[in-house]
Image 1 (cartoon, rainbow, N blue to C red):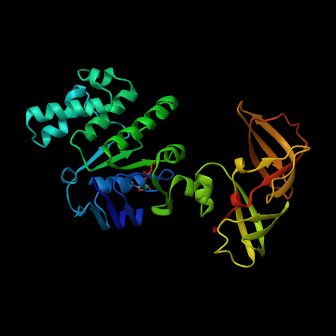
Image 2: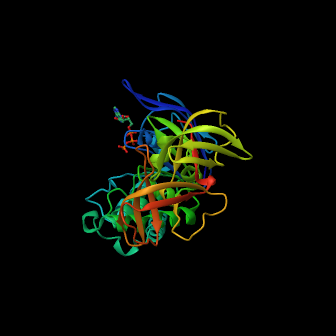
Image 3: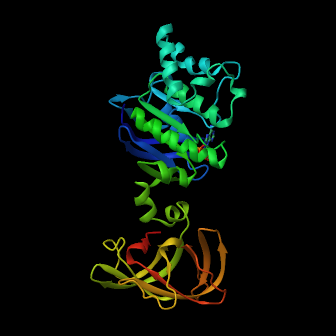
Length: 357
Ligand code: ATP
């Protein structure tokens, strides 16, 4: 198993800069995610690591080998494509064996490695079938087995679950986590699905226009986004304009249309005055019902309920806080509230994130 180092990696297609000076070190054994919207360059970056695209500049190192100029088959990477790319005329067993035969392994070794890979993805009983006799999820497992059969030190996954229905996607997520943990293989996973990344990643980056905009654990990126782009791309949020009033002890005091709120997030780099954008997650806003007290330390925002969508275990409310600002509020175990009601919202200063742009 190996680490992956990308230094100033760049890819230009004509006038399009698909990947722009990406610098990343991916730790051995991590399940690492490249997350971003369509066209941000994540597939191009993965293809350069695999050796299917040549960088316009920069260096790619796998373990202690500079692989920038090596052909794909010499890089010790296994790739799973979005479309699975299984050979339709070959059985499951032949598909999985293909890479091993190309590498000229002995027959008995090929057989035992194929058995091991099929067992790993729980497809032993389907070895004789052709791909068109399998469900989408089963084809995905075969594609994984084929990529893993020759024990690559790096596993590359390009939107591996995007052709599956919602239920199967969730099932396959845990399968991928299990397989990566069982093998300890360094895995780079490309997706535009933030739930996939948040639920699986050890470490991840958010990409935009060929650039890495932020890196961290799922929790860090979700709770401490540094830009509007990351805050908005990773889940839902409320973006509120505010004016910096100053500091009180460890917290910033910020003036919004609905009064002052406090923040303990990113206080160190805060200028003394000026305008800033706050990001507050809808689930971080707590409705304070009549007779309930506001948690100590929390700021309060008052508003009027516009409407609510009841979703069973939770409700999504829209609350008008004045000045044309409407907040989304997610409430677990919801009580019924009438549109037009006065609403008191409490917010913990830890959950008021200050954004750079
Ligand atoms: P998606 O999620 O839609 O696959 P992506 O983030 O993986 O998107 P890329 O496929 O890496 O994005 O594409 C990045 C940019 O490079 C896009 O603007 C795309 O049009 C362009 N691009 C990708 N491959 C080529 C190519 N072979 N020739 C010209 N432009 C390309």
